[in-house]
Length: 186
Image (cartoon, rainbow, N blue to C red):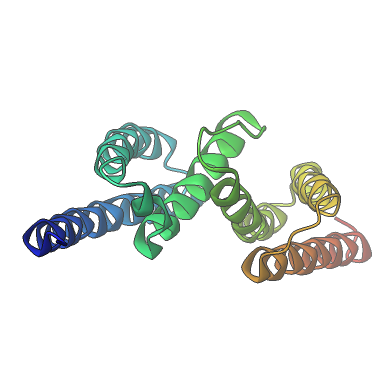
């Protein structure tokens, strides 16, 4: 006979853990946005403290997700990790001028990586306003390299393909920005 009480208990436990996952995902998401916002304002010390905080929150999120293999495919978890990847990649680029490898599922790493050029473009506009053409060129070269590497994949997922296309548009914006700077003699 099917043990309906046991089945019900499993569903209730999953829902309870899922609610915890959603709450913790929101915490990671909020910190990701705060890191990016601090970086756009050149508040590196504040961003560094937020990075420490987000790492703690992400560890707690991972602990919750381990309760059930399905948890890592929950929408809130996926979005939180994408934003985490974007924020940490952006932080390390601003801090050290390079990308770092983050230990997350490949899909979430790619999705976060595809969001990074949007933040890099915003930074490039900020730097262009200060006449820092060499730094804008460095950003354009990085976005070009990211796009070139992503083109080597055969992505089946529509969301990833759409985000890769967005990288191409950010690259175009950066190229237009540089052309505009050259035409204006900067």
